[in-house]
Length: 83
Image (cartoon, rainbow, N blue to C red; front, side, top):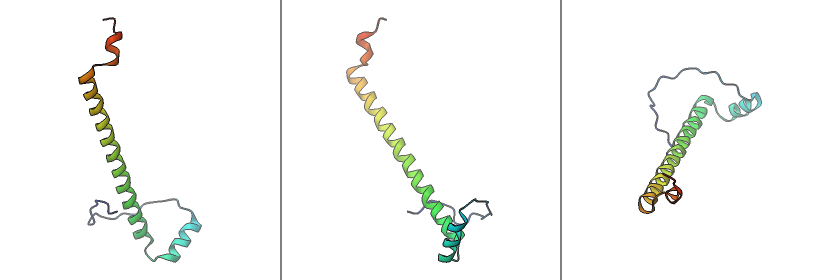
């Protein structure tokens, strides 16, 4: 999964609090820990964006379905209204 990001964006240092043992193990596996974390973060951001988009589409489809139902059959409350 490739995130939509500006690869030319300026990089800046950030402070993270991470498990020291986990960082030691990761550094033994790569000489570019920042690059690995950046790649994982980009994947996470893309995954979350896709989930939010899917949820928004589901909500839109549900609203459209209920509006269509209401247009064809009216509201359930109509037969009980005292107005």
